[in-house]
Image 1 (cartoon, rainbow, N blue to C red):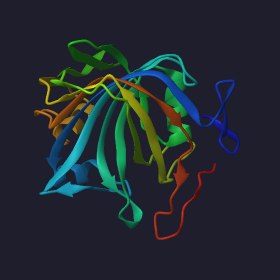
Image 2: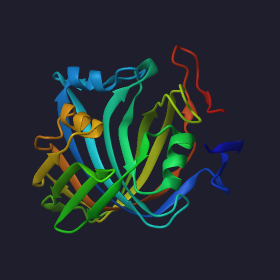
Image 3: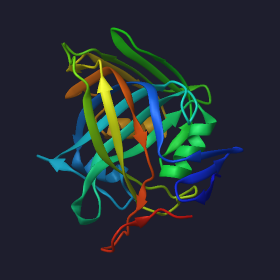
Image 4: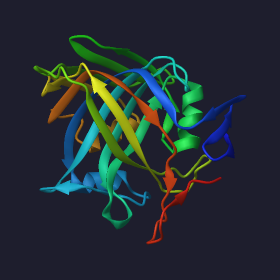
Length: 248
């Protein structure tokens, strides 16, 4: 388990990491889906968050990312999440599965930001489509193909996506954390690209099915180059108290 040395500074696997850390070279593909509100609530069981619901549907997200070398090393990542509300109704993205191919980033993600990272084996390629396969202990969890949309956005886009995280284990166990995911995106294609998926027998596959990811996405964003800083998340009282710095 990582240990906090001071504000924003952690010791992990014999190295010292100080937040924020800056993503310098990453490629992102994402697909947006909808799911029945009741299914999204079941996925969030035991988590002090509730899904954002529009016309009876929750909004969900599947993303694949390849990170070049940066503070958390080089690795691939696949995320399953949904848009939620936390205390006082504040919206954000909550990740329910985040398998990665690196042990260093797994430990950092769980302990720094309470992200549900676990070790996977994966194949991930970008091109006319994004092809991704996730395996756990050699067994296939999911296999997906996300086609490029028709529109290429030539301009750089800046986003700052609010996020919520919560784990029942790790250095932040039982703490509800809120942060922001600032992203500078360029070179992306958007639209409603072709999509296919095959789900195995696994808890992640079950959540993907519950969150509508076996159907066609509303929107795809493919081949985006992503950079930006990632700082500390802050603990939020699960009642009506104000926020405070995350602590160990």
